[in-house]
Length: 380
Image (tube, rainbow, N blue to C red; front, side, top):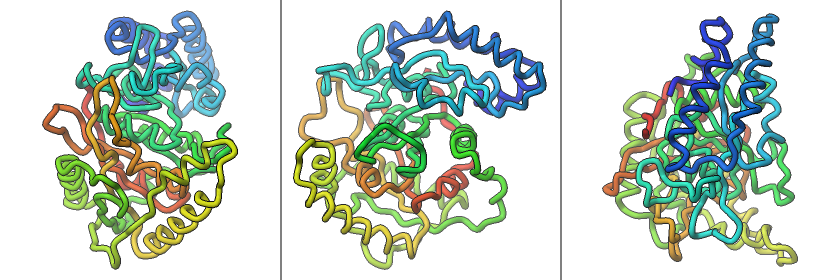
């Protein structure tokens, strides 16, 4: 799959038309969807018309940063939050799958043709709840798809599908979530495309290239954040740690030992209380305050925190049992820190493993600068 940036450059130069790009995309979706089931709806009639509008805007001289880029939007209501992307020239080709009603453990995504499968192994879930977005990007159907992340719902499917998944700082972009736990995000195969998404959505975010002379940020590795119980699978930890070491060897980060071991409190009770109507919020306030103190102290000494994205590999469609895939992600929905999952390698089961990078609040630019040039391979 060609990157979003390359597609946009070709459409702006009129070497390609948005109409032709969308036609190829829709044909690719037609071929893959009966098996992958990444889309709840495909907008085969509307998308070509939207592409014609983009071509007309380009012909009129508009410099659209994402001209003609086909995207998937999370869920049937995803267009409501995709306005800045559409204004930037993206063409929405369909609504990606999310969990179906009454099937929380049978599938993490319910597409028009059935349950969404992991592009690497059809007997495994792609993760969720941005299931279809991750699967569609991993399978090369679209270069970019939107997501939302309330407990890891962008980062977990990114890890299990082998793509990049960015959750932005909570509260920095609007959402309809009254709890404040959910933040928008994006799934891509190229770090530059995630940066392009962020420049459009934030409006004032600088281009990562403007920081090329900055020294690599200091980063601390934590396999379990001090609370994960049971501990993450040893194979997952080893693969993610090896990816962290490769980042350091490439000069993207400086791995440093922590002054004191980071030990967060388990966010589960707080997260669940905030999500439960009528719950006693005292525990949520206590856990959040304690973790905020720990993280504030941590980020006073280091610029990045590196962890495995998930404690377990992708499970089957029947469900994960008693283990939460959110164990290493939902702490940062509670605290609000921006985080990204990047491909770390593959487990013995042949499925991808993710490495999570967490930055101080409001420092999406630091995450994207660290990943500049990262690319993942297409699953199909």
